[in-house]
Each structure stands twice: as structure tokens, then as C-alpha cells.
Amino acid sequence: MNVSRTAIEQQKLFAKLEPSISRLAARGILRSYRKNTIILNEGEPGDSLFVLLQGQVKVYATDENGREITFGMIQAGDYFGEMSLDGGPRSASIMTLEPTLCALVSGSAVQQHLADEPDFATSLVWQVIRRARAATETARQMALLDVYGRVIHTLEGEQGPASGQTPVELTQITHQQIASRVGASREMVSRLLKDLEKGGYVELGIKRITLKKKLPARW
Image (cartoon, rainbow, N blue to C red; front, top):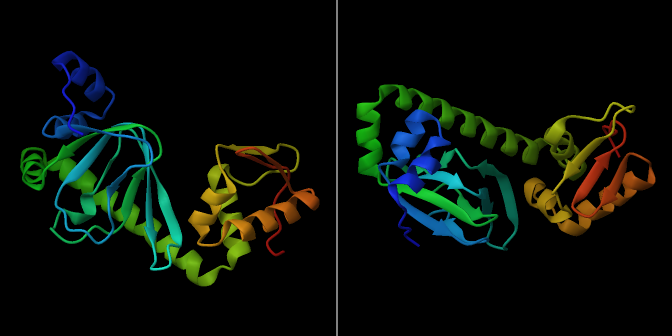
């Protein structure tokens, strides 16, 4: 839904962004989305970019059976949709995880911004490289690690492994979210976590997992 904001409100929103991204957002149209709204669909054509002003979104893909793999989360202050600026299909789907506000910037407006601010073009290239590297790492894990290995990589990748003396608490993470990240069923992830809890490696709570000591490489 398109949103009308006063100049002062927009200035406050854009002031939280990096200067070049703020100027990019100013070229767009504000749109608000409810929680669990799909903003972009994998495979659809598109040449626009979204600057995330408020909220959080997840980047994911699904197969023909509805199985989901989550590539990552994007926070306010960042942008997404840049992979389709060449007019090609969207490489992943985007869903809001909470009420979200974006600035939708058309492809032509992005092109003008790149011409006006060459430094942003460089940062955009680095952004594409970082996300391509992350996608490659996800593919490598799916191909070379078993489900347990992918679960461990996900848990320890949040804040690092526990040392034994200092437990690491992961909050706002569910078994289903882990399952979506590693490409497995929630039931399988829950069984693995329960086994680790019995072994004294983790402590499970509601949307909370505490890593009590370094997780074993094999299980």
C-alpha cells in the first residue's frame, strides 16, 4: 500500500540511513506492508529495488513440494531486489516478518542514482558480491553437510560456539526457522535439538536456545 508522509516524517525516516542510501530512498515511493506479506516472488520479472526503512524481511525460496529454504534476513537500513536490476527474474522471494515500510525505487531511478553517485555503484557491487558469496556458502552446506552439520553451522553461526564457561543464548529463534534455513523438516530439527539437550549441550526454551558448551562435530 502506498503511504503518504509529511516531509518531516520522511526526513526522520531517511536520517537513519546511510547518506547515499537515504538519497536513493528519496527517489522512491513509500509502501507499507503487513506482517507475513510476500513482497517479491521468486521467478517473477522485475527491475525495481526496495529500501527497507522499517521492519524486517526474510529471503527464501521454495520447491514444487512447498519445502522452504531461508537464505537470510534483511534489516531496516538495507535494501533488496538489486539482483533483478538487469530485468531478469527475481532470484528469491521476500516476506515481511513484521509490519514493514519500504521505499520502492524504479529501475530507471536506480540507474539515475548510479549515474549521479558513482560511489554508490561501487557499494552496490560489493553488496552483490557479499550476497552471491552467502548464496554460494548456502549451496555448499546443502551439498556437503548432512542435516546435523547444517543445524550446527546455523546455531553457532548466530553468535559463535559456546566455550563451556560462558553459555551462548540465542533468542527469537524457533525450530521451524532453523528447519527453513537448513532445508529439513521441523520434526527432524526438533529431534536433533532434543538429543543435544539430553547430552547437556543445549537448553531449550520458548523461542530460545542456549548453547551450554561447544557442539560435537558429529552426532
